[in-house]
Length: 532
Image (cartoon, rainbow, N blue to C red):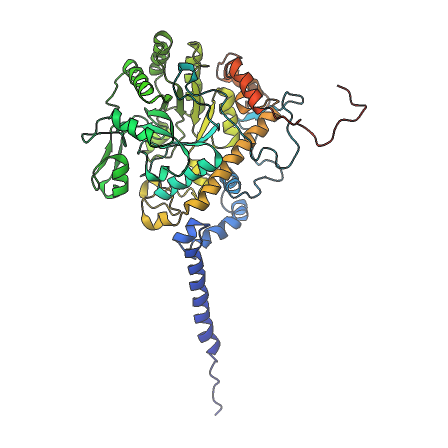
């Protein structure tokens, strides 16, 4: 009887260890590399995300969703931020896939055939553009340390405690590289904020970083803090778009020694932020406190708020007009903002979205003839060029970027911010996850994104015939009605024609600052037969 041949298993015995060794080598490489936080935290497994991203267009086209269907940031928006941060190709081919004609409320920017500003033709034009604010912050009220912000794009308030130390450090280093400033958020000024970037120090209801042992505001501690750090301005936080009128709670388990030292609270104990300030209780006492802070520090002082009831703003503007006291800047946070975790009802339905909230406040200040004396800052998905351009046309002098800045340093919109389980180490205090985020590398990406946004804002301004996005007027933006018509922006929001622009003096100065010495335009001189 013939013996049955036994299969040769030598190849299998060799292949399995070889495969295991290859996987181990790949895992070791992922753990060592610093380019991708996701791979450092989830070696090998994290590569599935990049594979799915690579075949994402095919999956969405046939199975899942379109490029503009995901929220809060669509795939196209995230792709633009990621590509900008990595200095990759952030152009889009084959035309828009937005349903422009059939989308009511869609903004269209009107370019000019002939304008004062002629867009340069060189491929790198605008990449390193200097884009200062059109107004001098604090000048209207003679603050001792009034200054012109070097960048109209800055990093919004995100606290150490909400974001990891590595994320804060990456953003601060990125701000230094890009020449803009970073808002500390209400969680205090941490060591991670001291990496070269200029700061706006935010005073929240708990006065973290400038409070005494009983939790009361301490002016002396505030003065010591700003004297020892590159703090350019103070921002009193009244509310924010994600959770207006709510306080906050950081559980004791998350209150590390670092967070405790930064905030001036006991380590390991629940950290409670009240819903209201103890230093003032109405507009009159608010303005008294603003003037006290400005006099004692010499810094410009402003407020940050979401927009609900307009009675507060009417009273504030009336007092500013009649008494001479006032804030130097107003930061309006749209209800669509979202770097802070909140109950769903607050996230979805409490406070006005940015455009509606901002325009109502701006109109009140304009009606009181105060709009040229106040620097207006906007927040709420304004880190995207189209949204930012509309904000500038409506009267913003600067925009703050929050979630878009998080995307630039590695956030993948996992929406785990409230769980302490952010997979890329951005919004977590988990030491293992945070280690995946390399501040030095990610700071460069943050700076690349900020510069790219400024470049695009400059290019659009020049397309509109002006030198600076703050000079884009409401006539330059039309809002489509869904099919056959459009309405100028000033008519949509009930603006007078001159509203939304800086004063004539500020306009002249920013034109001077933005006008290059070299001629603009094409690369060749006109022919002898050219007319005009």
